[in-house]
Length: 322
Length: 51
Image 1 (tube, chains in turn yellow, cyan):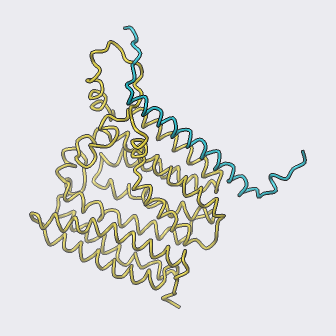
Image 2 (tube, chains in turn blue, orange; image 1 turned 180 degrees about the horizontal axis):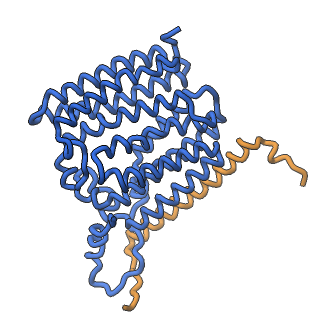
Image 3 (cartoon, chains in turn blue, purple; image 1 turned 30 degrees about the vertical axis):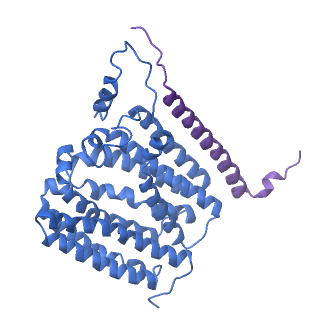
């Protein structure tokens, strides 16, 4: 479907008195192109991929590791760029996203598409040359999964959009491990599962508060389709799975004492905040509970991965079992 | 329809210059990446060859 007519007409209205204008070049700043890459998501991807590298039972040349991380970040940014190109019509009607470069008219949709495709192909090729073709293949799969499967299909088609689409955000640790070992092991598979199960309670907490905006944009988020109460129950269910899953690295021996404490306390807090979301269903208290869960979920994931990084990267690992 | 070349404003020219500089920096970074990658993968012996 066409994602751009509203944008194009906005831009064209300002120049409609001219008989013909050459192919529109961008008036965008360099910062606008950088914004297309969703830098905060890129930072998260670098972080989780780095953790995937550090928990791996071998080492990689630091230069190759650094270049690989950069390419994973660029690939993630490219998929974000393609997502912004496709979703420009949705972004234009949501307050959180209407100032993005395309809906704001600072960058033409075609430019974003070219930019995203170029970076996608480039990042996959360089990662393949730098590390190995398994990691490059996984990066390519991640980009296609996010840009095509999630953005173009699932997001507008099913309330399970972010559940299935969450796989794209969960893959970077696997790519990181593939860079180091040339294969995908149990460590990065567990990290994949943690991010995958973390995604629904994280996004649905926000969707409960922003349900009106998603409805206006025509996005079938869970609160709009199954209703807020069903969403709240599902948030608790996912958190109940996430809390013990978060401790799996300890059981498998690559998470130590620090990680165990963070995982236990954080998992219980996630579950507690989810129950609060279930109990407080009306008014400002409901929004506050949902936003508390949303905010804490980010902190929880960050702390889990930071603990692994500290233990494996800084030598702070103290075994809990055995 | 006759084509009318678009007259760029001074601000647009300045933004275009900044974009050009950014592209140049990215290309230079790519050159550096491929250079250090070659050394890292093949080792310093890659430079030691008969002329």
